[in-house]
Image (tube, rainbow, N blue to C red; front, side, top):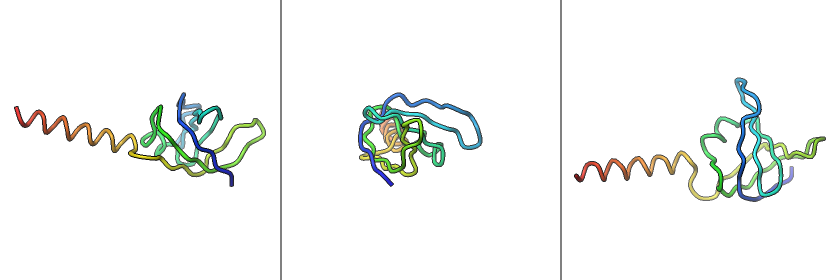
Amino acid sequence: MQTQKGTVSKIRIVSFAPSPLVRFTLGTTNCLIAKHSLNFLGDVDDGMFLTVGGYWNKRHQFVVQKYTVYGKTKIMLDIDAYRQKTVKAGSL
């Protein structure tokens, strides 16, 4: 298994299925993820820094089998924003 590191951009859903196929760019590398794609969509947003593990397919796309988000995930940031909004609204 090989690893790649970089910043995520251009997240797109390629096919809608019970396990969607998601395409994204990591730095300058085109990547695909299918195995944990729903979790990936909940965890990752454009501009986040990731480390991914996987392999290269015949079309020179990196097929992701594992990923790690550095810092807080998208859902964690959304929860923090909600809590801050609730605290500000409660203090009025």
